[in-house]
Image 1 (cartoon, rainbow, N blue to C red):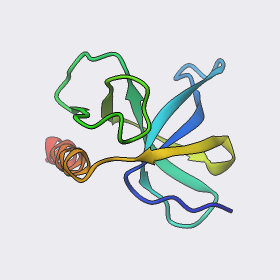
Image 2 (tube, helix red, strand yellow; image 1 turned 90 degrees about the vertical axis):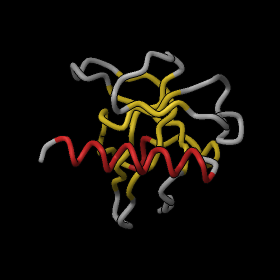
Image 3 (cartoon, helix red, strand yellow; image 1 turned 180 degrees about the vertical axis):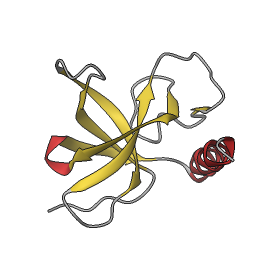
Length: 110
């Protein structure tokens, strides 16, 4: 079984929120504890910006095909078997911004 590092960008069959179907799309690995699942955040090329979205400055370095945003408030636990491939990893500056957005997300509920 493959293990992933936080900050890895993967291509996976991302299930629709209504449970009806899936679409292959990139996602950001936030956590892999070594079991059969990973926690990921959605990556989209729709550049709408919300409070918990992080626009990637070095999207090409991460293996993405277009300017993209990580939506850290759109989290999902998925089986590693749904991952088609590892595309790349976030640049250190982008990863730092994602980590800061995750911290803001958890602060939001306090």
